[in-house]
Length: 179
Image (cartoon, rainbow, N blue to C red; front, top):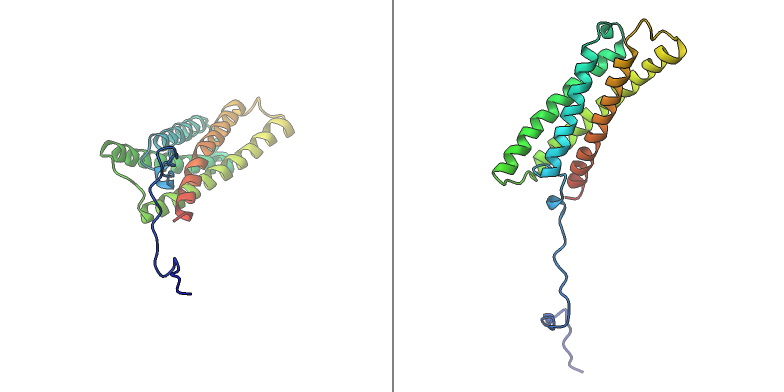
């Protein structure tokens, strides 16, 4: 028998009938909100900066934070987080204003590595500061001699900054891994 096969002579699909529903194109990763250059991405950067800067300023207003290494580490980590977030917020504002996509592989790599480093440092500093705050408050019962309320507030703000930084890292890492 002399029969042609589809692999030899490909046949195109017939156009869909009027009653069939055509599926819309799928949303790609570079179109998702929360990625760099989107409004949600800008909002995440703004909240990262806001809470990191607030944590930094609350801790820096206490007179005895330099005596504890974990609190100095928190000041350094939140300072770095606020600078990183402010810089990328300005990049996001530029990208939104000129309607430019920030889905270049090198840029996404830079964003993912920077977000990973800064969020890890902020989380580690917040954990260390929380441990010292619990030690001062619960174990030593010396909150009357220290600024426990400011220490606790600064630590809580650092954790909130980390919660805002984590989605940025995950979106960038996911975008990088899906390429």
